Length: 394
Ligand code: SOE
Image (cartoon, rainbow, N blue to C red):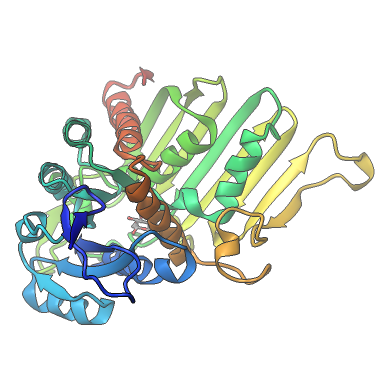
């Protein structure tokens, strides 16, 4: 018996009573940090969400045979291949999950779209705006389901902030969005060169890697930016070569980025991303100040959302701390009873759960490639601003 698969291609469905749901065959390209996080999410998602498909970790793909074969065993994939064209051209594969260095996103995503695959792509969407536009055109021309993995939207406390904002908790006017994404893994000037420090492979440094996340959170929580001005810095200009530490190589991307500006709503924006904040391992903080309330989030305490309401009685007014683990809070009820806190890995499980639901409903999830393009437009406007030392309209 055959039926149409999740991406409307013929799918051989084994007729046996135990298999009540069609199988969604996943191929993942890349096996490093994000490959590990995504593999865990693909393995776990069906344990916590009622999905319309059985998820099969079909094939993992990487250029290094030994490392890819090891990742296949360790991360729970059925097959391993060493050329991404094999999974894109494999008719059994329904989904391509792209976790590769930024310069390969466009070529792989465009080929995957033409092959009719649903696509999940790590951020940033591309190296630059032109590539991002070509990716969006490819998925729009082919109609495949597409998503960019801005996983921090699906921290339950962040999704709760979005829900409260949508319900009007901030009042009619929002005054400030203040956000910072700070890491410290490059403070050691002997840390060797990697692809993330080379403009040809990464496109940019902290800017596209982590500024992208808080730009997306700005879009998610408060809407589009109107105009911005930005500045960048590369604190360590040269680093030891990974394969020959006695030789130095030029760092061709930013170590830190700053951006101020306005949202179309009129709210003021103040963002900063850095890889040089000693002690900040993966610290995302934002505070939103509105007419009626303020919201504050700190990823180092990711289950908590702080809320100040101006109309609360003066006698007990103050920031209250909401632990976003109630079943009524976004995603939280899928896991454990209240108070049993969640972690970084759950943001990927939540993201992939919504991606799989989108494949069934054939309705693009958010953030889609169109949202990823909006981030890319802000990233590029910021680089233009710094180059011209000028304010730029988005
Ligand atoms: C490196 O900065 C990195 O792995 C980012 O690329 C991820 O998006 C972030 O979640 C953790 O840090």
